[in-house]
Image (cartoon, rainbow, N blue to C red):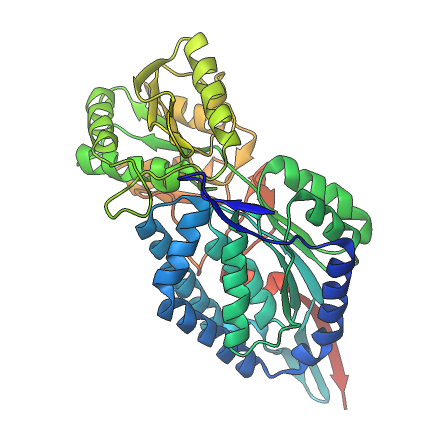
Length: 454
């Protein structure tokens, strides 16, 4: 398998992919090691994962450069991702004992009723390339804390980062047969779906998530799918500082080149402030630098996948044919690397692909609305349900809108953020299941009820 730098199209490295035999061997060693790992005291498992987070911090420059070289995100954004992963690990390890230890639910004379939380066993984590540290940590850290062994299949576009993760986990004290990396693309993923794992945890597109869920359904094991979104944002007419709101929401739409599951992908603005908001939004986006992601001060690096350039071109073409206007951008940047101009479209409608289908790139449609009711109706007009945002000085007004939108997360005066203390989950085509928070820790265990009389 050839690892290509998407910013330069240079060959970084060639890596031998796993075969059916090697995947089977890795799975068997994980299965064999699981009972012993489960028997390790929770406090010791916590210590190992905390040491892993320490190693991430100590090696951040090397890890960030590796990440940037294979996915194309700016170096500072790679550093930010690793620091974010460290913070999540701190929360998960700091709360593991609270949520994974036995709970006594009832004590009567001669009777104790309690719940214990047993690991699922050996789990399969099929992960994503856009935030390999963050979406990986969401799964394999709580899984390991709970006593599971893990087969981690990174995207083929984040293989080098996955190998760095494996190396640092072992350096932190994790036995080599508790965590294995499955190296390869779609064919290796298919091999994993054939094996008798005790749970499947996928992050990626709706199409692939649906396929995985259908493929493993007969196994009757947990299958969580964290999928994409077409996340809406509404700016009400009562906002105070339009300039700062435009800057913050532009970042929510374009951070990591728009390649975030919870990127802002549709913006609705009250007509009373629309012109001023659009003007400030465009100024902010045009102030950011495009270039080699290894250079400091760069905001827009390359896209990770070459194929996505065609998706973005098709969305722009479709929008223009249906009456949209390009304010800035609109085409790929010629030369080496997979670069696309930051693109802002106006006069858009929800019938356009750019307002319906996940873009996963530096493109946004901004639409004028005349009321909260119209905004609410348009925000709900989607097959997805990951996040939704409302900007307003009135919290009750914002919460009233968000309460009526079927999404896993609601944001008031913020967007495109994730907290380890809160559940991360989707609705509709954005998936099902939970990572993070106490619910995310318990996603990797089986509760057992104990009735103890004596």
